[in-house]
Image 1: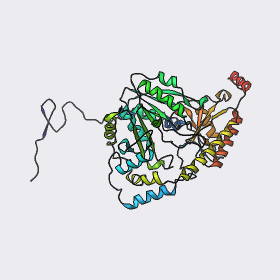
Image 2: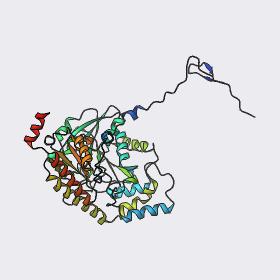
Image 3: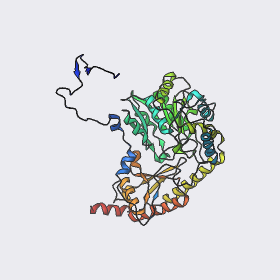
Image 4: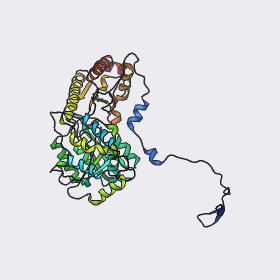
Length: 443
């Protein structure tokens, strides 16, 4: 027997209407993008996509722009890492849903890996995420409300601003100082704090700078946060990726009272950015976050069903069985490339590279007054592509004009060739003080 139902529906005022056309209303399509999508803006994509320039067809393209260590195949992950993934897949035990915060055994493995007396960790202090990017997103979402502000480094990773603005969170930029190996201008940082400041982001080791903060500098950062009662979101995805003459200190190991959400993952140190495995480590020695922040992170993690289960199945083995030689060899290659690049660019008139101490990058200042043909770093890097087929990111992408960033993960011969072409380019366009003045007078 067919179902029957009355051919009317109730209006909000209690009146009924026919399912036919509403009197006086003409149906029309009105699909609009959300306000959140309209507020989402990636400065790197905006700048790079607007650089409508073709490389020199006579020279093979050398891209020093993408922070992906796997692109050229010269930095493969370790065989132990690959075997762990294969065994997790073959076991058939990781094909279903995991808890949104990650398997308990995996959270225990991460806690054990990072646990130390200065910053103790248990499984409940770990939230597994889909890459470090999602870790940062969840950390921001739990700490800040729309209308509040966060303090972000300049130059700094563009994702912080992209995420914050999409959430209705204001971004205040604090300065890093190239003349002091990109240390934070602490007076400027503290001057930006107000009653609406939700957290300060500390990125160490740094993208885009390749800098590594000393223990004493980190203690001064913590002193500012302590005085102002502002928590820290620590982006430590490049943790332990520091060169032999430097020491990495996780900021939480130096904190006695400042609560910290530390974000990390497999992407860079284990050279598998596409595997999308990250984590948040909750450091809260004085119970300032309490249950509220922990519960908030759990609820936010439930918006999706957690990171890849296959990678989770391999995680304990990846963390605890990857041989130390793998890390050492990777850092040796990066240090060698950094030294070659720094030495080559230091010898070029008009360029001032800042020596890196870790991560995968170095920043180069353009003495723009000696290149009067170019208005800024974007024009400089555009012409570098069109004339020499070398692609470096203009540091306007990182809120820091008249610098550019070089990625040092490419093969050595490519670094040398790129530096040679950059030298040729600069020699072609460089103007000494008198030449630059004459060119200005001719305009």
